[in-house]
Length: 439
Image 1 (cartoon, rainbow, N blue to C red):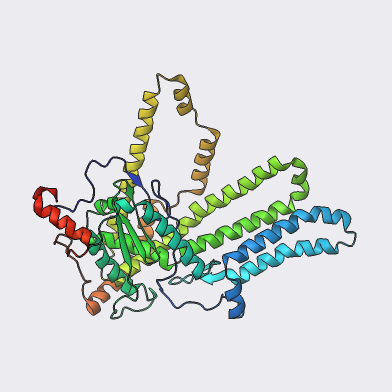
Image 2: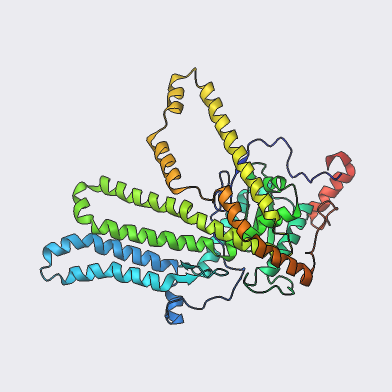
């Protein structure tokens, strides 16, 4: 019986669970430059705009420009109507946000790869790359002391799984199974051993996996393939950019609405107007992080399921994985509730602390209400398993066809001694040779 490779001592304390685009202990914006191509790039938006014009306007700067011009025009509009008897200037000011919204729709309308779902995309690939490079660099720099050596067996094992998946994400999931060649891109794998984060994510050419995710999946190849295919699907579908586009449109609509009612709200003063603006932004944040994000999670589940099958991994394992993740969610929630009860019990001797814990604030009550109204960021476990089961027959058929054409995927034995090439790895070997019990 082999022992599992341990990345951190078993005494690691707190457990913080996080899924794709939200983490309690470590946060990384879901930015990703589009290096996975699941389908042929669209050279222009769906609406028949010239490619040159579309390439110029398809940028985050367009959203900023339209937003600024719309807010400025709508702010000046009430005063203009009072002074401009001919209403000419007023009509121009009204037309600015209308033209801006039309331009955003015309330029941003796009189709998602693999599903052809309509969505809005505004960030260019260069802007994506810049954001993801910055985010990944900052994260890895902050976690440098916790990064596992790239020659460690678990890193090489994960790399073999990712290479198998990378071969198939180049094709549309609706394309027939074929004999796949080597992956076009070489992806870097980073394992962070912090002992308190349950997460994995794909950001550009970087795939980051936390040690608790490996332990939660029992270092099982098929289970980790499910997790990695899901994360790679988020990246292939460009969900970060899509969320950015959705938020931009909602903020624009909020600005226009606030501008329309500016005639009434102007007299209420800056404090009330600032509160209205904060409420609009809170609504947009909740809508994008919960209701809309659940739709993206569903798409990542289904697209990842097809990636998994076409790479030669049994898609039926996905049901076991998401059941396992649901149980972990329940355990973590129970742990948090238990910790809260312990805090309340410890605070019985302190009336002030006890009162603060017993009486939730208005903000807490509002957060609870909004959470019930909008739902969580991920689909409920029962719903997730239901729609995956509905697509399972198709995924199993793809898996069986893949095995006939390509055979089983390449496998790396996690429990074999990994090759040692870096100076750090040789030093570890030397320490192990001098003190055998230190390994």
